[in-house]
Image (tube, rainbow, N blue to C red):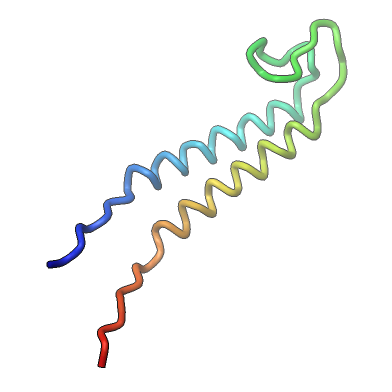
Length: 84
């Protein structure tokens, strides 16, 4: 009996979407001071002119990791070698 086929399209799509969102969040962290960040962002501080560069770097690298995950999930599938 053959194993069931895996359909990873939804997972890949979600990983790409998460990667895009995280890259946009990284840009927001780099461009906006802490007082201008949305209130639900970690690091929002009223009246602060500080930029959260480390938060942006972290969001950027996690976004890149999501893209790498999606890339590897869309690669060629390995088949089991049949015994000789």
